[in-house]
Image (cartoon, rainbow, N blue to C red; front, side, top):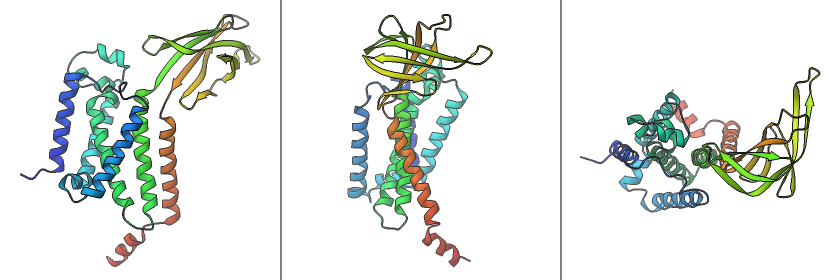
Length: 299
């Protein structure tokens, strides 16, 4: 019996289920930045080598086949249905669940081996067809490359980045500096920098309810201004949000700052921008001339 794409994906699905039941969810913490970026570069280099040197092999042709498209998209749609049908909990809450569905990672599905292997298959297929079009001449190949390579970056950074995303909350006091934050799971985390409240201003409506408020804080002596929905970018991967404050005092003694760490957010934005550029080229260049001629010939 000839080994086909369906056999490959059935094997990958069964293997991911076995690993999920045996070892639990995928260890994203081990593959944190910058290791994930290095793996992505090696992955892309491997696809380029496989296509350039072994494009005629049965294995490479399977990743380029239409059947691979059906299987990878079907896997992604099924995974999206699981995420929509089952409540997605934090890692700590999901670990407390029992039963077959919990063993399969349905309550924290984006970090399950089943979802990760399916995403790996989709990105491999997407990368291979992008390379195939990139190595072929043609006036419209750049719009194809921008759309598909942008989608590759957005999917990779969106899923891997969300798994690495960390959200912390820290009370920032007026009378003393503080570096003790709390994670979403309730764990204490000591920041390498101290935060202190310098000034807090609240603007009210005529009836006395708060209309707008902002805080001026210091981060290791460096001044920063925080407003609601206007985060302060401490660096390229870390943003500070003002979430609440001491409403019991006329002059708030503290405010609460939320720290969001997203190492790959700009990579995801780059992917989105690439897709927008590809869409603009698609609009400006019009339909593919070869396809247009085929349509006219078939009349």
